[in-house]
Amino acid sequence: MLKTVLWIAAACAAVLVALAVSRTLHFDSTPAPKGEVSVAVARPAPAPPAVHAPTAPTAPPAAKPPPTPSELQVQEDAAATGMTTEPDAPKESPPT
Amino acid sequence: MDRAGRDGGQWRRLLLVAAALASAPLAALAMAQPPASPAAAPQTITPQTATPQTITPPPPAAAVQIPAFSPAEALAAVGVLRAADQQGLQPKAYLPETLPADGQLSGAQQAALADGVLRYAHDVRVGRLEPGDFPELWALRPAPYDPRPELAAALTENRLQPWLDSLPPRYAGYVALKRGLARYREIAAGGGWKAIPDGKPMALGSHDPRVNALRARLAAEDPQVVAVGPAVFDAALQAAVQRAQVRFGLKPDGVVAKSTLDALNQPVGERVLQIIANMERWRWLPQAMPATRVQVNSGAAIVTLFRDGKPLLSMKAVSGKVGDETPMLASAIHSIVINPPWNVPAGIAEKELWPKERAKPGYLAAHGYRVIKVEGSAPRLQQASGDDSSLGRFKFDFDNPFAVYLHDTPAKHGFDLFARQASHGCVRLEKPRALAEALLEGDTKWTPDAIDTQLEGDKTVRVPLPEKVPVFIMYWTAFGGGDGQMHFRSDPYGWDRDLLKLAGVLSSAAKA
Image 1: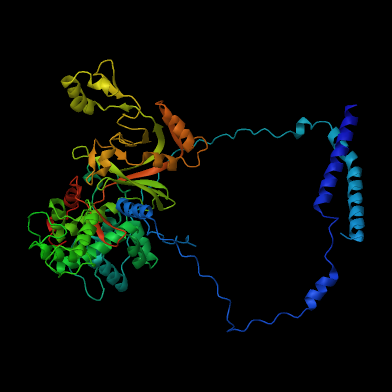
Image 2: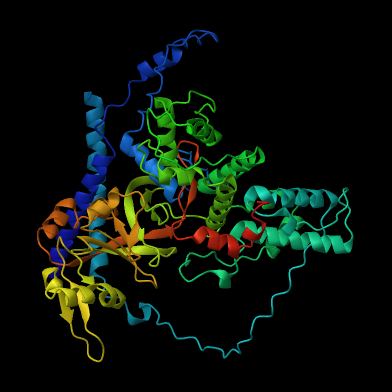
């Protein structure tokens, strides 16, 4: 009796696993239409931009807001307690 | 989805399910297998018989042989030793007396140069004090350093100059002092500054014959001040005085009274020595500081919390008074006590509290002290936690042999002073709650609300920190400020002079 129950349970588990695997393989998904791919390949590549073509002006990086009085005070106090690095100094890259 | 794709997918899915069904009996069979025989059980590991070994002591370390300096290396080394004054050291302490200009050294000259380089390397890396020179309260001491193997390797690997360049502390605070040393030596070489005569306080609008002297004195350090100007104390001069007062850690009221005059009249040579003393202290710090740490300057009575190498929070402090100096030390904060009671040290009880009780019976009870009887010795005092507790609401504990700690205080007026050396050695904090919250950030139990709840009562609780936070208590009296100028404090403990004497600098003060 126990063997039968175990047999049925194993069978059910196997079916469930198979169903789960089949879902991950996307059997139902639409394959990409081949025609479109070939059209895309056949399409002439866009002309490379001229070397000196004016590029669209990029927005300047947002200016860092000036430090608040309390931030300035923290910097001053940090100098008094012993600064080990320059304020806002870039971190050194690790040795290679 | 198109029909063909869907149909194909369904067929493939059915095939997979069928394969799974076919494999199910195999799985059942596998499950029906009898348990593994004992023979297949993991083998027991028989203990290996330990071969008796005789412990032989390691052979004595062979003395490191220093390779000979090539002529180019000899010249490079001499160049660095000649520039030792830039590091606040004295070149004559390291340079052999006579060396040929072409770097071709005899055997004796090779040995003398190696000796000078080794002593320089030691002094510029860990300072001139020997371990036995450190007073007890200077408990922040450098690790032992023997430069001999490094020099030998540098010469062998043809990298003497980079090694020599790597020796001084690379901290921004040290570099700022090095720049300041060069600048104040230039000022000294140019004749320094003249003292401003004593007199009545000068302030905005003063018509005082000393105004011109004041203007010239300020111009010696402050590039914004023009040395010559009207003989009246104008607004520009007032602003210059205020900037100077900030640099000296004084109240920036723009009034030139005694304390400001005293600071201005310190000779430039004294400032040079002060810078040299502080450069020496930088050499006692570890080669790499932990990115997150609490730093205390007991000389300026300021505390800063650094996180990820950047200052996150700072506050005024009150450090120990003369006679109860806050020691220099390195430790790690391991816990915060909320609502701490104060176990009064016997010395404070004897000298300060019992006399008050005798003079005015009931004093101790009125201030929340209770007497705890101790068998075989004098009773001790404990002040209950609460708003009136001398430790306030927070205490930050770290291991140290001096029983000092950082703590809150009910005496907030102490932070309004500009000379804040008034405690018995512990460090009182202006913003203990902010420090506690910063150290407990990320602790899901001790949120700000939980701290609030705890503070509603007086119940004492110790909160261990998830990770210990290193704490460094230092004594800085000269440092480069954010304004690019040198800032000085008054050496309240007199430790600059002690250090200069121990380092052998003061005897040659005029030359420094």
